[in-house]
Image 1 (cartoon, rainbow, N blue to C red):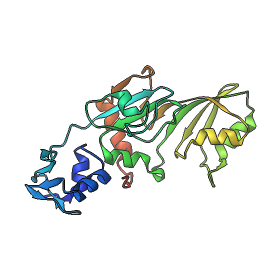
Image 2: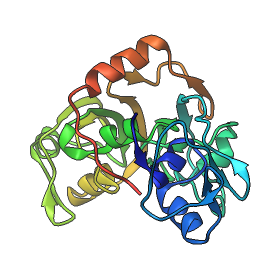
Image 3: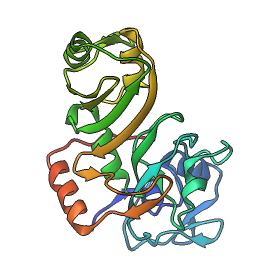
Image 4: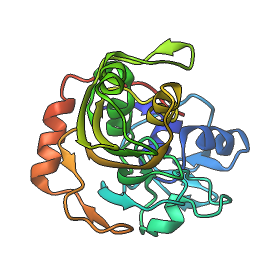
Length: 240
């Protein structure tokens, strides 16, 4: 029978993160089959896990949603942060965002309680595409598009080559396969422009479509199947 570390077993139920589970175990608040839990111990699906006497071993249903995030919402699970994304969505399950969109940006962000799929999407070496529509503060020339697509030196590195195409004289489409902090804003600033608006419209096979700003929807079975297919050979990484 499959065994897993206790902190992961608790995290997989959606009750809390692995780090938080370690704190609960260390504080003596966790029991396995009625006995005090030990840090690092392994459990099976047959074991009963309780926290403060409450059973948490039943795994909640998996949730996968697409949100059209408006400006002003922070992509954090810290409920102490004003306008955090968790309170904005108000989902009945404990879900968290896949990656980030900065507070001043809008558009597509995925939210889930499936930690494995989060890690696969976020691991940079997996080269998963994310598509954005960006408007800058003044008209740009062809040299700007070439420089953006070939790579820009930011954050002590040079961005990967990417696809950039003109939409209007001050608006362009960009497809990235990495997610450096405020990457597009930093790239345009390096070239002497300022982002006026930034909207993500696609993550891999999931598109924003006609979803209204501030609304969310469940991913369809077709979208989930496509996502699982694209992630099939992706590596995972542990994210506390």
